[in-house]
Length: 316
Image (cartoon, rainbow, N blue to C red; front, side, top):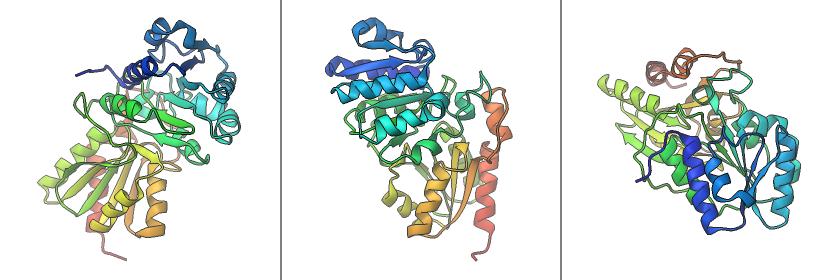
């Protein structure tokens, strides 16, 4: 079984394996070869590696041109630069013509981006990508799931965005785990008092919260959602309809991410009391990833407290 230091290494390992079987696969870097841990790809396929330099808009435009010629480009650089600096190119050159371009955004959230501070901590990337028609948005929970998901999703048509970290994200799943693309995963089921719905690199904290609640006699079901778009609507509705309340947890602005997606779905199909945990529409600061996540309400204790209050609240 392959094990990885983090989601960057896991994604590139999957990319190399995909490229070995598909000669159309190419990699475009925006001065991000080393940051992406992608030197293995460049060494293995030097004629299929293109360096755009510090020019993310050009990198995406190059990817669009290559995709229009029948190739399958992968662009890897910081998530904030893909989704903000090159947003127009992603939208107009890739999504509008429905081209097969895969983007991997590094430094997702606080846990993924402690080193460079607020300019490199992508807390808006998922929300931005969700608003663009036709883009699939993946937020795997750890390196093992990143590898499995990247391999399984290689044949998806149209643009795809993967949210990756910095290498500090905790391991949750065992190496060799299988993944069903687009379907949520029930990680544990202690009862139907509250659904704890997680995405990305906070799953270990959500599991910790479920353990705290279990000791208090509160039964929680923990679900991990790797596809924020398209959302596993039937799976989420099943959770909402079977539990008294739900808490969404994400290392992202609460505006536009998983919490927004679940709340929108609940409003349409299954009205439910929901608490949305994440970055509360503010810019975070720099610092150690774990301490930052705790400070901004993503500790196991904070998650358990939010669930506890929802369960105790009287129905409207």
